Image (tube, rainbow over all chains, first blue to last red; front, side, top):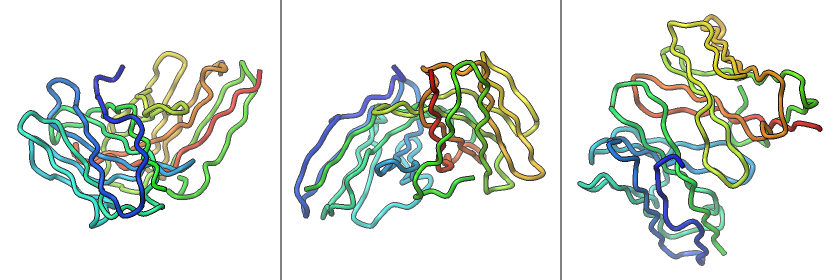
Length: 114
Length: 111
């Protein structure tokens, strides 16, 4: 158990809908990262938050947004969903911005858009 | 390294043999590198890391080699076991910011 919790584990929704994925980082970790993993492919970085502020942005679509709350949990919002958005979405957390440590991953949310 | 978005390359080894998984990284300023293992249906799991001031680091049955000259990273697994079957990703980090992942290699261990 990495200590990173993601909910829900599975989500099935229709095209055009909006969903929210939730991540609780490891206790004490200030950084949260979101990654997308399409079937049998690599991990695409979406966005990083540190202590409530956006720190880095990757290949995140304008239809997607995220935030990190004062209690450090994070939510990834996906709107106007398309079939191609079906993927595993991972959240990871690490400790201190600017200090290289490994990131710990949650078990992911599998999103299926039908 | 493998390009993100392509189907994963596969390495097939016999149980008991040594495995070597390679990765090329892109950013010469990256100063921290990590290997992750991802089993089917699970999140990536940390295996071993190495900082740019080192060329080699050993763990239990795993060794990571870093060649900064050619921006190359390798993961060596000794006496590969069926439980090692998974997808392996290298990741590079610069100053604690976003981790950039390679495309991954699928390791299949034949009994």
